[in-house]
Structure formats: C-alpha cells, structure tokens
Length: 314
Image 1 (cartoon, rainbow, N blue to C red):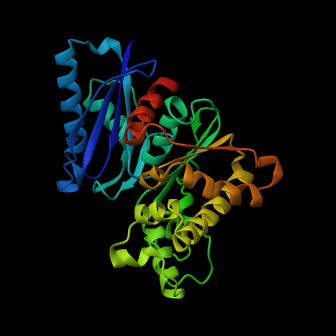
Image 2 (image 1 turned 90 degrees about the vertical axis):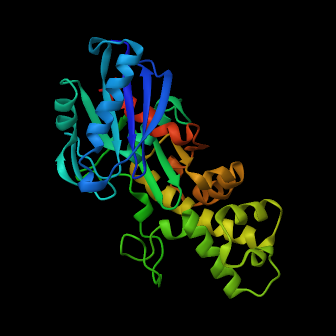
Image 3 (image 1 turned 60 degrees about the horizontal axis):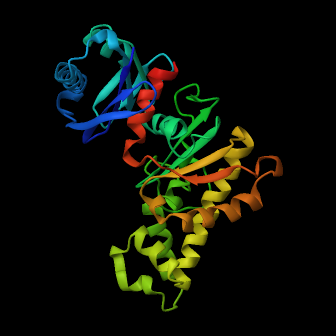
C-alpha cells in the first residue's frame, strides 16, 4: 500500500490531504462543511471527495492504507466521538461509520488539536522528538500531547486541554468553558487583548496601544512590543508569565522533550518564544526544565499531516 488520506474537519471547511505513506503530501484541497441537519452530510461529502480523487488518479483501493480524520471534539481511543458541537454531531463511532461508508477501508480518528500535535511531531517542529506537547494559541488555547510517537487522549479524550488549566483566582470574567481564570483568558489572542485593555485601564502612561482603542489586536500588541513600547512589553511579559507557568505545570506531569507553539499568536515568532522561556525555566522543576521550545512549522496543514499519521502509525 502506497497512499493514505488525511482529513481535518473544521466547522467551516474540511481540509483533505492525499499522502504517500512516507509523509509526502501529494495534493490537498478543501470542501465546505455542511453542518445542517446535525451534520448528516459531513461524512458523505468526505467519501464523495475521496472517491473522486481515486478516480482522477486512477488508483485502486488496494493501494490505499486508510483514512485518518481529525474532529473538533473529544474522541476516544476506539473511535467514538463524544459530541462535536460545531458539526451538530452526537455520540457515535466515527471510525466504524466512515469505514462502512467507504468500502470497509481502515479509518482512524482523533481530536483535531491532538491530531495537529501528531502532525507536528511527525513532520513539523517536533519531528526530532518522541515526546512533545503542542500548544495552539489562537482565538482560544488548545493543546495536544504526543508520547512515544502516539497521541495521549486520556480517559474521556480530554488530555491536552491546557487552555482550561486554572491559572488565576478571582478572575471576574468568565471563560468560554463557563469557569473563571483559565489560561485561555490570558494566553490566547483574545487573552492578550484582555491583558492590554486592563493594562491601559490601570496605567496612565502614553503607550501607543492607546492609539488602537477598542480595536487593538494581539498582533498590534506584539508589534509594538518588538518596537520597544513599554506598555506592550509589559503585556507580552505578563502573557508569557501565564503561559510559561502553565508549561512548567505540564512539564512535571508529562516531562516532554519539547513544547511546540502554534496558532495565529505564534506568528509573533521568536519574540514570543523568548517571552515564554524565561518564566518556564524559572518556575519549572529542574529535571524537566531543559525541554526545547520551538515554533510549529506546518501551519494549517498540521491537522492533515496528523490525520495521515494516525493511519500510518497504527
């Protein structure tokens, strides 16, 4: 068998990658995620797209190792998905269902953040390590844990959800999860904006962050910090403190070889890594403090790579 498919299902689009089993990406494309009627068309649309690809390339099923699929919700090790709210799905075994719909082919499924971590571990920023933790800093904060080259899912599929690690007592605002003081409230793109607005409310200096008013973004904050704006530097340092401490908590539990930082906020580059590293080194138990910290390399393709890896590695 020479080929496999990696499918990354999002609430808006489904990204599909056609791979050689050595990890070489041959082609990629997207189809719309049709979530109407409780997402009843999602798997059918995937099957249709894969079938069309096989016909176009004149490839037989006997040359396909299988399909890997990443989903926006908890997925158990047996392929059971525990609701995907963004898709309208309830609880069912997605591996079994998709296999039945596509010629009985092998199917492996995982949570999208975990699968993206596996992709980075396989062919991205973590390719030189067996044990990594990937942290995705976007609108929220996601995470995925890869140990000995395999995803750690946890009992209910919740392993790696570090965005909801409690970091701050007395937080008046509510996190999207319903609780208060989660890492996501300080280290996500929206979290950086929250910290910036609080800084400006609590200080009367002439930081250029004020020029952006209520429309300030995390990118604006990091750009100003890189230019030496004192207020913006303070905000990025505070964000780095929260994230660095969270990483030190993870490290004494998992003891990874490396942390891989991805998501939109990671576009701040080495400046972000430097902001995190100092606090991580200062607060982490010494035996775990030498973990490398790298930027992710695969961008939006990480989910496809990781989905393909699910099939190749299992």
